Image 1: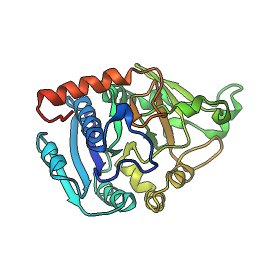
Image 2: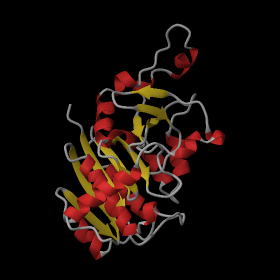
Image 3: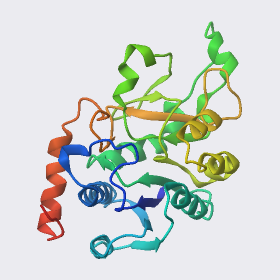
Length: 274
């Protein structure tokens, strides 16, 4: 089975941080976008992936940057807000063939070199890895049914707040060939899912684009213990990507080493400015 990935990468170099959080390793926004994109691009080099950049009034430097990469299409508009650029991203996602996997990606996520190796392997065997059985005395599984039958959504980061006592809660754990995966019930708008899934939840995604609101996305789309008709959202343990802001790094991964490796690649391509 050959999985086709449609990468919809939303980028804006005019705004440093929505919540005024400090960027990772003291980088500015342009450096953050470059690191985020090159790490994602390299992780998908050996896969069937098509890249579209949804730019919000990108600078000349960023437009020149994206010209260095094959099979990358840049749609640069003047949206003026995260909500409007997100709506454009969703508009494109609804046009993707049902069987393709769509990655809605924000411009400040650093990916490991092996992130899509792990993700593709999970997708190819998800019916096996996510299966739950109601046999014998597992009464909970009798109530929720077979989780492998639910639409699957993948969030690539393992946020550290999930280990804080206040936020700990019961969740399903799955084992794939390379790592564990945890059921989660809240994400940002960086998610990977089949095109047919985003079409199934089109109304919910459209509502979440108002604001935009991660909370609306999480509450309306993601499966909880006794919910019906929703999608199963999971994230890897350890994280395959991290939000590039201080205080939210996916734990147990050397993200400085990952960042430095991508900076070195950008320097080799002569598209990195210290």
